[in-house]
Length: 423
Image (cartoon, rainbow, N blue to C red; front, top):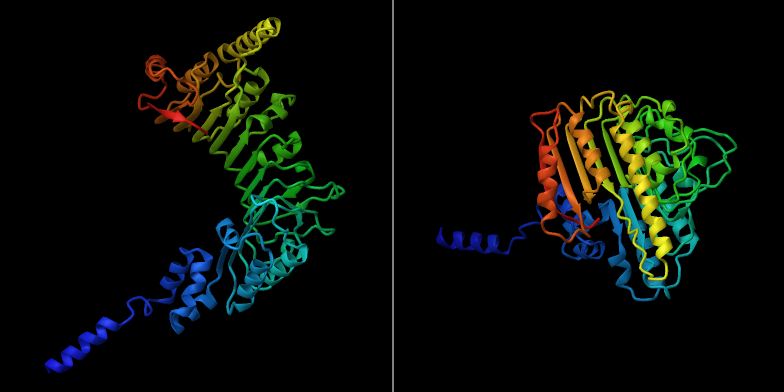
């Protein structure tokens, strides 16, 4: 009996503790490893080899490419080999082509086409192509792929297909650094299942005319996003979350405020790099808030602008800049103080959370916060992060003291001021 126990003890000591885990757990372990380390698990045992061959989440990031030095051929062959090894669907494929090594040879379009054609036929659901060296063109096999649900394209050229059917099952679509060409000839493209649309640093957005009845989240950021009012208003009526920056707001400044549709479903608004001293920009923001009766969360950051002119020979320019700045502040202040202003006329009855970043404590910012506090009857929390360039350590206390003196429509509203915001 003792000998038998010793044998069982030795067997237990030599047993692989993780090879007999459920396949789902082993696959999750591979997801947490860099792709090169995940591939090495195939040599551990037949158990792990089977898991690797069925592993369907492949991420080729910048770390993967840096391991091969300046030679292009190895990683092209390795990616092709890994794809052809798959014995199951590749549900996730991420490719981040680095632009840091400027002397590297570029990936051929034919190689990318081969990979994407394979993926389109093997059940890909999540696809991310981030290109730092391009330009590469998205092939039509991806545009018409029936399995893709999440698609992210960065610096990849895109042309609309001649027919009106594309991205039929996509729920999340993100374009960054993409230029949409004017070749649609008035066609409205239907993306029936789209729920999230992100457009960052893109050109020709107005050529991207879509019908997306399920769209819930819209994000438009960066300076190249010149958006027509009709394009914007079409989606404003249905979405639940909106994220735009000050440049997009400024492009909408010439729109008659009365033409804003009521954003009946809009619950979250995020506004970045706002210039509060620009009256037209502030007017658009106020109208947007006015037309969002069910708004629950408001996030915004101010734009840090250095108006000081250093050259001692430019005194006239410095004085003129100061005069114009004072005039902008006065005009914006009047807008916030005006009892006839559209935002003053009604409460933000559903607003519970306000988050403010890059806060400088300027006159306009303080008036804006004062207005929000006085018009938010169920407000619960206001979180303010001061701008990084504010050096006076007493400024936070000054902000807090002044804000606490403002009248608040909600007795539950708490004001919290955090440290520096380096965004």
